[in-house]
Structure formats: C-alpha cells, structure tokens
Length: 419
Ligand SMILES: *Cc1c(COP(=O)(O)O)cnc(C)c1O
Image (cartoon, rainbow, N blue to C red; front, top):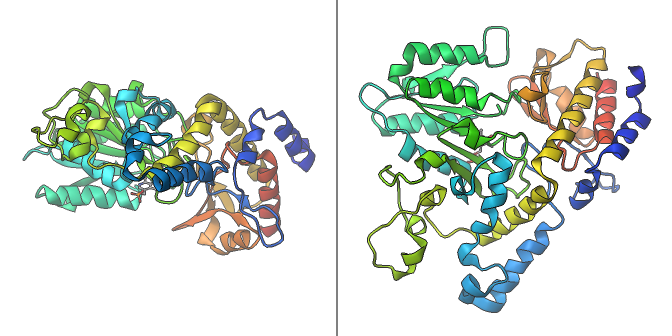
C-alpha cells in the first residue's frame, strides 16, 4: 500500500472528488506570503463561505433603505426570517421541519429545553452525562440540579472503561438498569468533542426510555458532520451550535430539535416571550399567551437577522451539496488521514477516535505520549491549525466541505518530520 503515501496519489484523490469545487467557495486563511494554512479546526470554528458577506450586506442595505419596513419589505422579510432556515436545517439533522428552529445560542437552548424536559421529582431527579462532557454542558446540568434543590453530586457519569478513551453503550445500559428509577434525564454529546466518538443515538434513546428517562442530545460536534437522523432516533430533544461544522461565524445562533411527539403538548412547562406566541395574533399585543406548536414554541425573542443571514449563506451551500455527498467524502478523507498517520512509525502518537467510520465523524483525536504539548506548538508554527485539548490530545478535523486530500497528505508529511 506504500504507493498511497505520495503527493501524487493525494492529488489523484482530489481529482476524483466530485465535490472538490466547494473549497473555492470558502476563504482559506493565508500566511504573510500568501500561502494557505492547513486548516483542521472546522470542528471549533468553521471557515467563512465567500457568499456570507453578500448575504449580510443584503440585510444591511435593506435596513439602511427601509428601516422598520424591512420586517415586511426587505428582499427576505425579517419577520419570517428564521423560517428560511428551518427546512434546510431539518434535512441536515434528519428531522421534520416542525421539529427544528434556529434560535439563541447552544448553552442557552440547553437550559430552555431543560426547563421543559428536566422535570425532577423527589425520587427521580438524577442526570446522566458523559464523564468527559464539554464543560459548558456539565455546568449547565449542575446548575439545573441546584436550581431544583439538588446538588452536583446528583450527576451520574457515564465513563469509559479503564484503559480505554471510548464509551461503551453497555455501561450506559448498566447505569440505567441499576439506577434508572432515580434518573430523570440523559443529556449526552452525540459526537464527543474530545474523542470524536459518534454514539448510537437510537440505542441511547431506547435505553433511556426503557426506564422513563427523558433523552436529550448535544449535537454541537454532530450537526453538519454526521447524519444523526434525529427523528428516527426518537430522542426527545437536541441542541447544537452553527459556528463549528455549519460555518456560520463566531458565536452565531444555534439550532434546537424537539421531537414531533411533543410538538402539540401545550402543557409542557416552558418560558415564554412574544416569539413563541401564535404568529397570527402576535401583533395584537393583547391576547393571552397562546403557544405555537413544534420547536418554534420555544423561541422567546425576535432574532438577530445579521447572524441568521450568515446561517442562510452556509445552509444554502449544505442544501446544494447534501449531507449524503458530504458524508461519502468525509469517510474517504478521514480514512485516508487515518491510513497516513498509521503509516508513521512512531510510539509517540496514537489515534483514540474509533476506527469504524460509523462510529465517528471527520475528527481524529491524536493522543500524544507524555502529554508533550510541543508537537502542537510546532504544527501551529508551520501554519497547520489543529487544537490541543488537555490533558494530551491534538484534535484534527479534515472537513469535507473545504479540506482536500492534499491538505491531509501535507499535514501528515510535516507531522512525520516533527516526530
Ligand atoms: C462548542 C460546544 C459548546 C459551546 O456552547 P456555546 O453555548 O455555543 O458557547 C457547548 N457544548 C458542546 C458539546 C460544544 O461542543
């Protein structure tokens, strides 16, 4: 297989790549000599589509020319702006349009969804999360427990087995079998931010529901990366940001999913504002609160249009190419990346991400021996952008939208010389 380990072979793979044209549609950061960086952090902040500026400029112009009339008269009237995003976002996460809306930011959304779906009783109140959950999710869960009069000791951790970095679904099964009567909620990262492991959402849901536990999924590292099929998985709710794989800009708005089975349940406790009030009577301003059906019934405020314009620019690209084509390339690209790394004859690095393509997205997490942070520093000095996560991992995400097989080849070649 040595022949694969050549620049010419990587260029051949790019030639055969049917969606390689997408790279041209993005701004790739460059060094002072005009050479493009090797960007492997689309899992942290996705690159900017060249079209984003036009989309935002359109709204700035409409605001300049129309003022408040833009709500109705803008090219894309602001009043319904979030609706332009719904169908496309629903396709990306495998949901029905009624199950999805873009609003707020991720951690805020997790709280709003827990207001409705974390309903602890005196005996059933604990929350299960992964032991290495993203810190924001853990703080959110702990604060919800405290808000309801419980303590952070009431978090149950789903931990990898000793000696492994990965989660085993059987361990979750055991936790729920043994303690399910005390568990109110499972809040799990669908794709773990640290290891890149993509969990079986349908199985997690079956396990949770077998003991009447609500199941919520954080899809921050899944949306636009894997195909989570949220509707079919049966999860009760999910939330994700759009600035990672969804390329919508730093701090941009987030998405939520509420399963159709809850869409007409107006008795669910929830916080309210004018934006989850019935659209037809919203501007009468006097009606008693009348909540909307579906995910829209969790909105509170009229949303920031400039951020939504950036999301629209990105989702239009996703919609044209489709998640099937992106996933197909992604499996090849990450497979090639993995192959090249494994060719390096070194004891100093080890991939901890699952090797089965069905159990990962595009990210590979490389564990570095003795937690030597220098390797990451040296990569960065050569404009290979990856990220270091404590204690000892370099995360690298070749993103099928804009990374090439040649990017991957170049990156591994430099990695090899550094080792
Ligand atoms: C990126 C990420 C966050 C960030 O939350 P914000 O509210 O967008 O700042 C939270 N949780 C997970 C799992 C993430 O990957």
